[in-house]
Length: 410
Image (tube, rainbow, N blue to C red):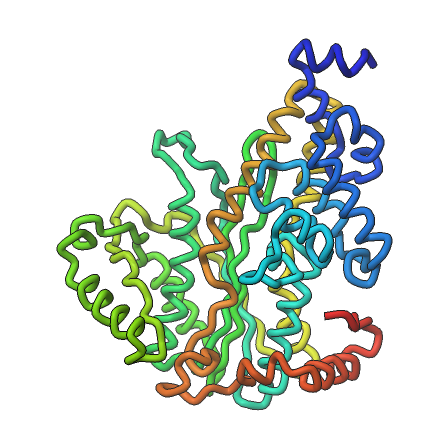
């Protein structure tokens, strides 16, 4: 291999960096001085120190944190530093991620960080594990047959522009169906979590939007309910901002200003929320792919606990990345740079699409915010954060899964 200074002066440093196996921390460490930026090299050291010093948090079996960390720290994602410094108080202070207003030690990026995903799993277990006998629980996986390109804009073979709005529409269609059937009384409640399954990274990042839903009902779900669900997803139309109604003449802003003034003068305790952007349906944004519904009735609390664990997990990038990389090394090594760009595009796009969408989403009797309309069956938020309640939940999980190792750190 020629001298790395020659690589940089000849403009090939980007290609050399793309040739690195980003999912291998040892390889990144070997070339950290030559091919990594100073910040990337520092983040690599922080990640390796966490894996060596806190294996119970970052090196558990089948966790995959090291591979994900390598892909993230080499990407252009603006939250890569937040991800890599998770649970490292010294590093977070050094990168100014902790101050008087923000004191969180964890990064909260649970769609990528395995530790933060585990924390959210425990929150879900503490909230609903003891509600198994409240009714009939069913597990529904709603997945579309086909895939969509994960690019900011892409002209498909039918010469129609595909963008992130299309992916948002498919996820929104499942939410619309669940909310409608809950409001109609078919379901008593539901817990929905959205996911983008990465099918491939080369030549385009292709994803399949799908959702996992825990459904609470009084009666068993039959085929007629699934047919109704399927019809609702195809009736849905994507939402866009109503730039005509949401303007300087919007009367909601006058009401907001009055409430804000009253709060500032101490007349009200609760600070008012800013009026949200008004949305209108766009007939161009519709579901075109067929949807596949897989339903399973949960018979035991063991199944229920396993299902509560399953949907909260980081997105799987490592396997598609290694598969595409190995194929390119054999057939077309010059396209490794394109693969690296696609990895960056997928990580950034996943954050842009999924982070604004609150997940898991609670409906009906599972929604703590609607307890005045519908009796809420789960544990309140104050109890979820209680140390004794969390310890009791871990003990119950250990009894349900005798072979499972429940981490003590939280």
